[in-house]
Image (cartoon, rainbow, N blue to C red):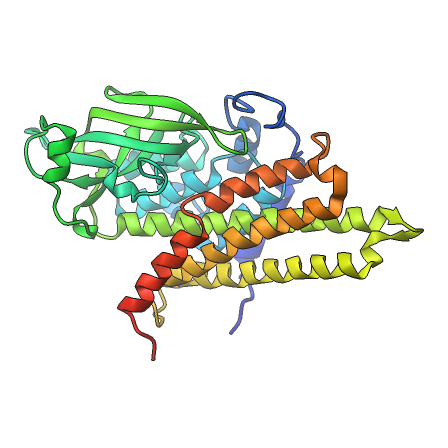
Length: 397
């Protein structure tokens, strides 16, 4: 099996390294030092540099000013962004844009995609459901009104970059009946859950019936609870194609794995540099067997995270068949990413001693981001359940 990246994929990674080279992980206040969000907006200057380097349009077709690359290229760029804790909605906006490109209406594609690639329009995705533990597609209901538009009601929690995005892609379950039904009646009217009745709505941030309530992540970033109260969305801005939500959810999950890998690699590099310089009893502590063994274990974690990431990204990109659907490879990658990144940052803090908890040293920020990534889109246990369900439905051998 050949895991060599193509020239185009390597070029995307090199461009990302050049753009992120000037980013300081402590460029914004620490979540340990401020009571609320660390900043009101993402790094707009960095966003502009990403647009100028054509890294916001990697997955878009050339007809929309894009490079026409694949998920692997996006994961390579996300990996580099996480090494420096880049505060940009690169994953969410890229995943939403490619979903609009693949499944959206011609009007939506024409109106949004070129501007997304230029950094003029920012997209986000509501993917955590009402509580973060329930399916996102069940958190919002959608009904057609007399004019053919869709009326959305429900709540999505922990929406990233919601206060700064122009549009939020919201999964919703289509229900029968009148748009004037109560929320309880809407849920009663739901058709059986499946891909046939799940929609994706492009909801403007500023829109009648749309309310945001501030939430703060473990990394100190500003999230939002998105409340929809009879929010009317035109049919051209609603995607009802079968498989659109499943594809978007897989892309978000594998992108999160790429972020976890990059963060873990950044932390292990930082730990290697520190233990190589920190001396005890006249020797660098990196030469002590107990330190070397722990660092080696974490290196193995990172290599497992990397192998499962590229396997899942390749399945998504190529559409290749396997013993399980691609969702199985994505679940394995997320299990390793969740548990691996947690072990990496915990070991790093242990080997750094007191410096690991010092708010003047960047490691504590990596720890906060790692916890957010570990739980984002479901912790390891949730994906182990999903993998078990897939194995039960598709017996091997």
